[in-house]
Length: 259
Length: 231
Image (cartoon, chains in turn blue, purple):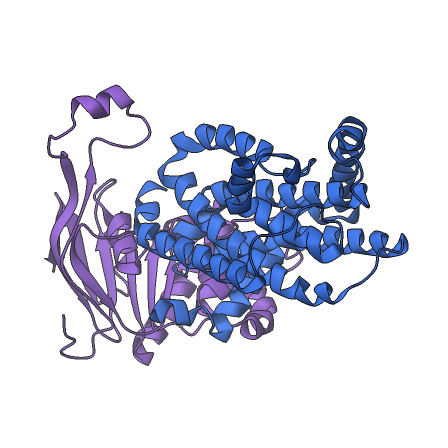
């Protein structure tokens, strides 16, 4: 608990910020062109998905392209979080084994480095949605809550992935297969409402689906109601964060042994 | 474990062992075959007692693979000891595994700012000391060049200069002095004497005890897994 509280100290916050800025400057070579190219990747996926799936699965959904684009951007966030988590201790081995500092700051910084481009992408989508006169409703007030909850969820996941990335590297290929399966069980390019009640139940408990539908609900491009209230999702996110943090702290010294 | 005097670092019955089985290289069949059998453990060192008082400079010597770095990592809390416990009091700075320059693609200045923060300086202090550290490490003109251009010796030198500008109480150094030239080593010896006079403490490892003879106040040797006091 003492260690957890120490993360809020100004020096720890400052170190986390420096690590975040360093990680960000390395992403996409730290250039605008790099960011634009990675965003172009989302647009390309949107075009392909639009051609393949909109008529088949999203027929009648208002602003289906916003629905699709939000799904793609959200899913890319989870992919990037898993990649960042698996690699964060191994790639930064020199720091992790060279200095004595709270290593969870590095995990939080890596999550932040993945989250910042996501925020920029989300902002761009919201601007375009506004340009096409999609209404701004009171639900936009929930956007900061959704983002904070999602950051905690991602940081918790990243902590768990960081442990796996060092101590159980041999399960990463298995996770890749599972992740691919989960991607099909997440409504990125289709409406889960078209499926049966059992499938809907599964979808409603898939955390990736919950965030994806929540952000779509806020922007007004939903085709399926979210099953949980905001505070329940936020509480779940805090739970995932604490689970990840506790597991990371428990495994931290073993990480030192393995690196 | 209680602190009796003004110890900055206290370790009792410290031991570190590694399991002979396990790890990624072992197949599932190998693991199943050995299931139920007690793991074979190899001790790097065991039953080590260690105390560090203010104003001490402890030289830890030993041959390759004797466990000096592992011992230092246990003291720094980077790895968990198998036996015993460590009590740390005061502000710690650990420079292990020649950690400077983790971000090879970034300029030296960025890595230097980060390194200073990682050894306990605030960002404000790190920024204020940037030029001083660069001047001390004779880096002027190369502060903004890529870190990948630096030699091992330069990296060790920069890390030590960053340490010289931090306000640590205890510093743990793992063979950092082996890489630097004689002039810098002499400069570092003078600094160490000053730190000892101020009541700060250091633990330094080296293969070569002669290097540390000029300023170490106490010598310890790791031999066959035992920590021994040397005269």
